[in-house]
Length: 396
Ligand code: ADP
Ligand code: MG
Image: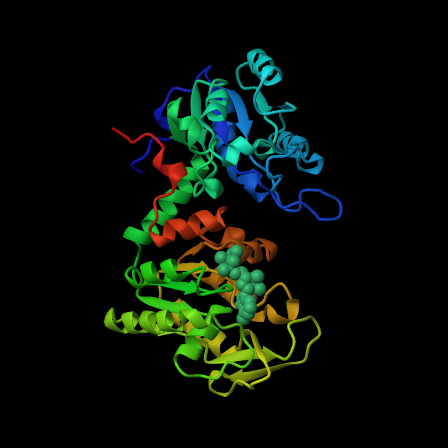
């Protein structure tokens, strides 16, 4: 990796401002952490800093408090979970800058961890306010960015602070970047990108960039309807982005010019209503009833996609095959996840929803890499430079 990491800097005894992405999902009813994989993912960095006797000042955002103090978005439960996972004491502060934080930082001994309060309680965080960034930075000697999931956002704690401190990547940031980088520039061929999810408009740049990088493109999910319609098929009441039909045609044509097979579902599951319990039918894509919605890919499409995936040595998967939130419409997504978990190929899971399914099915360890950053990985795969990565020091 061309960027410096914590292994390239002397952290011993230093006050390290560690930005992590501990924006974990919370149970809507109880407020309890429903999935701590984002905390788990940064443990190697935290452990390294403890072992190397740093004084760790850990910070993150949680949820969308929009610049206000929101009681159920405090960092204390996260700090507590971290303490359990690491089996070390972890202290907290009631803010992320100011007098109280400064005195707590002063008492930190080598290997101690202080978790700052939710950064987004201050509107200055998302505004990347220079004064706020300077105050945060003044707490530390070194800045370590391990928040890959927030690296596509130029905020005070992901970009602003780097102006004042030597800035290096943590191990999670390093791993994420190396995986994506390798996929884009040096993947074992043939390579395939399987793209699903809701809309074409969310993934235009991804589709365009992938056309130039992979050997096969497989497209499903809600966006497949726009491509099918662009090819002249009837897609019933499925959500169509009419203003993207021209672009869809252009992408299909570009794929031909690049000689990249661009495969769409050949059969789909349709329902008259998008709700649990709605009666469903499996139909060929040439024969979608006018009153119905595409809600998932059908068994022949699953078979077709799996036979293509099987040919490849590198697989990137971004976005669900259907409306997987409704279990009845999750078969396509779940079958693909299971199949990928059996392959010997390099399997990288990029999208937020696809990662969630893999996690929920307990298949994370069977994949080569499941990204912790849906939005950030999408931007990266589009070929866009991430602000939170740009600020890392270059290796000499
Ligand atoms: P990811 O987070 O994995 O990148 P997206 O955010 O692009 O994926 O899309 C996820 C959403 O796509 C899910 O909420 C899912 O319900 C929706 N989706 C998938 N297939 C369809 C479909 N056929 N019709 C409507 N929505 C769909
Ligand atoms: Mg998403």
